[in-house]
Structure formats: C-alpha cells, structure tokens
Length: 184
Ligand SMILES: [Zn+2]
Image (cartoon, rainbow, N blue to C red; front, top):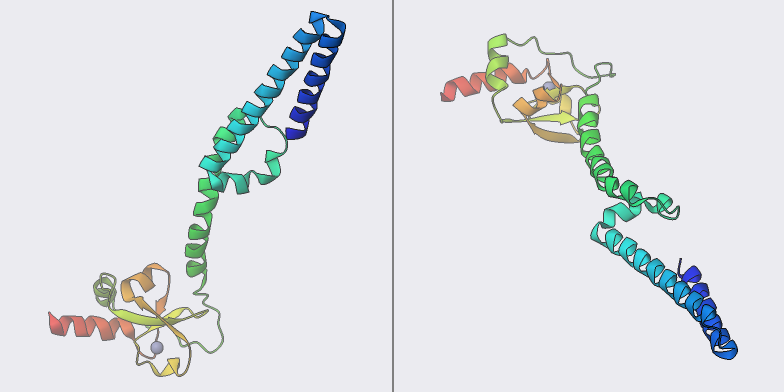
C-alpha cells in the first residue's frame, strides 16, 4: 500500500516538473489528481490500521485475510466471529469435564446404589468430594480406593452435575446425606 503511494507521489512530482518545463497546465492538473489519489490511499490505509488497533483480537483472526483488500463491510462483521472463537475454549473445557467420567475404566470401583432420597439431598450440597482424573466415580476424601492417586476436589452437587457417579466402596451419597441429616 505505502509503495503504491510512494510511486504516485513520485509520478506527481515528475509531472509537476514536466508542467513547469513545458509550461503545459495539463501536466499540473494530472499531477494534482495523482496527489489526491495518493492522499486518499494514505487516508484509507490509516483508517484501516486504526480499526485494527481498536480491536487487537480482530487483527489476529483477520491476519490471513487482511492482505486481501476486503470490503469494509466484511471487516466490520469480524468482531462477532472473534468473540465466538474466544468463547469456544470455555465451552470445550466443560465438554472435557463431561467426557472425563467414562464408565469403562479398569480398576475403578463399582457405582454406589444410592437411595434416591440421599441423591436428592446431596445434589443440593456443596460438601467436598474428590474425583480422580479419567475415572467416573466421586468419593469421600477418606476412601481407601484413592490411595496415592491424584485427587481433584469438587462439590458433591457439582460432581453429580458433571456426570460423576458415587463410589460403591465409600458410598459418598449415603455418607454425606447421613451426616447432613445428623446436623439438621
Ligand atoms: Zn470411594
């Protein structure tokens, strides 16, 4: 872009010199015309850069496309697309969390046969249970199965929402619902 402007300015200067030498005003008019075109190109370029600076994220997304002089309408639509791509990772993380509890894992304990009344109680609670990455069960923190595994603390209600199921060894639903009833 700037190269074109430079060529136009040099051409305008050349024509101006030609106009002075030949005393032909036509050359001067063409020179003025070229100067105006160069000025408009500079203005257009400046506006394009300023728009990019206002939305830095847009620059990255539009990096490939920016060199192909797109119409202004196309560029104005981009911020929405960028927002969507920014939102994608958050949605992806949630998806991962839901995928984590795969039922077919070797060596994981069975699922607790929870009393529906207990389930109703614990689903509302934020009492901490732990899960192990790649395993579908949640456990009370003292569960024997956990041994030296790396545990991830979660609220029991949240663990259920994410699709984790209670461990049959430590029966977190019965355990936590029972404790909750004692307190109440
Ligand atoms: Zn357990």
